[in-house]
Structure formats: structure tokens, C-alpha cells
Amino acid sequence: MIARSVATVFWFESRRAMTFSRLLWWGTLTLFPSLIIGMIRMTTASDNYPPGTEVWTVFLFALVPMLVSMLGTFLWATPAISSELERKSWVYLAVRPHGTPAVLLGKYLATVAWVLSSAVLGLLLAVAIVPFDRWEIVRTILPLTLLSCPAYGALYLLLGTLFPKRAMVMAVAYTLIFELIVSMIPALINTITVQFRLRTLLFLWADIPIRTDTNALLAFIGEPPAWEHVVVLISITLVLLLAAVGIVREREFSMSEEGSG
Image 1: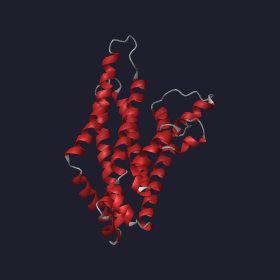
Image 2: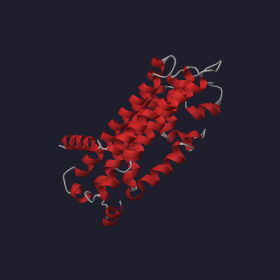
Image 3: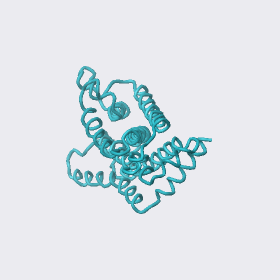
Image 4: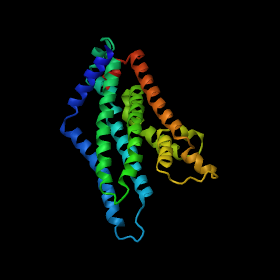
């Protein structure tokens, strides 16, 4: 029963996303990586030592699994609850069997599908501009993209569920503090971030040389094996989703929250 409700919400949200503003954002996110890669290609065209495959891979990692995935899920997953509160439709969803979890999961799946389509197409367009080893770059970046979109989507969905009135503010604060600052600190605390796991997989899958005798570097990028980081990312995604579903099932949103969004 809940699966059918989730599917209904997914298709409804997918159709509702076909607006000019959302399509404009989708197109901007899709074309941005190829625009940046094209500018880098033009700048380095006359260099005697142009960037190699590893450099292009790092550039595309920053642009696709990090920027497009993070920004896309931030824009569409974070306000999943606040938008329903703003429209004052939450009370009607709450009285229906599995209403609120179905809406949450349906919106999550629609967000992931929407952002993944933008990220994958953006990756393919950008890789077409890279002068060589395109398959090696796709082989590395595509799996990272498939891991990053669901993980960041679940993360921002949980933040939007915990703080519906200040969802965007809390999501920005988390991103700046944890994903952009804490993840760069070579200490145990950076292992709780999504970016740390993705960055480690980048070094492992792209065969970028790692000096195992440098403890600070290992703390910055993590250690093998790669499958452990994949399992952790998938586990984080599932735990965050379960936490968000548990919150919407148990929490009673007040009328002030519905009024302020």
C-alpha cells in the first residue's frame, strides 16, 4: 500500500517539476560542468604540459558529484516538508494512512531522479570536451555521482524534516561547516561527512598515488578498502532516510509551523 502511495507521489512530483523555473535550474546545473571544463580547456590549450587524466578527473569530481549533486539536492530535497506546511496541506496528509512517509519518500525519489539526470548528462557533456581518457574519467566519476545524489538527498531531507521553519538556513550552515570545512580537517571528525567518503573513493578508483607513510594525508583521504566506504555511504543514506521517516511519523507539526513554513 505504501509503495503505491510513494509511486503516486513520485510521479506527481516529477510532473509538477516540469515548470520553467525548475527546468531552467536543471539546465543550468547540467551545462555548468561543461562550461567550466571548456574554459579550462581553452586556458590550458597552449600549455606545454596540459592537464593529465588525473587532473581532469579531480576537476570533474568537484563539478559533478560535489557541486551538481550537492546543490541540486539542496534546492529540491531541503524544502520537502516546509513546502507542504506552507501550502497548509500537511494536516490532510497526516490523517491519511502512510500519508506523510509516502510524501517524504516520493519527494525524495523524485529529487534523486531529477538531480541524477542532470548530473549524469552534465558529466557526459563535460567529458566530451576532455582531450583524452574519457572512459577512464566516466568510469571513476559516474559511480561517485550515483552514490552522492542519494546520500546528499537523504541528508538535506533530514535537515528539512528536523528544522522545517529554517530548513534552507540549517542546510547552508551544515554544508559550510561540515561538508566544506570539517571534511577537510585531517582528524576523526571528518569521517562523518559524505564528502570524506567520496573523496577517498576518488583517490582509490582514479588510481591517484597515495603515500601510505604520510599519516596526515591518510587522515585527509581515508584508507582502503573501497568497499567499506561504499557500504558506509549506502548505510548513511538508509539511516538518514529512516530517521526522516521516523520523525514525520511521530512529530506533530504545530499550526505556527504550518503558517510560517
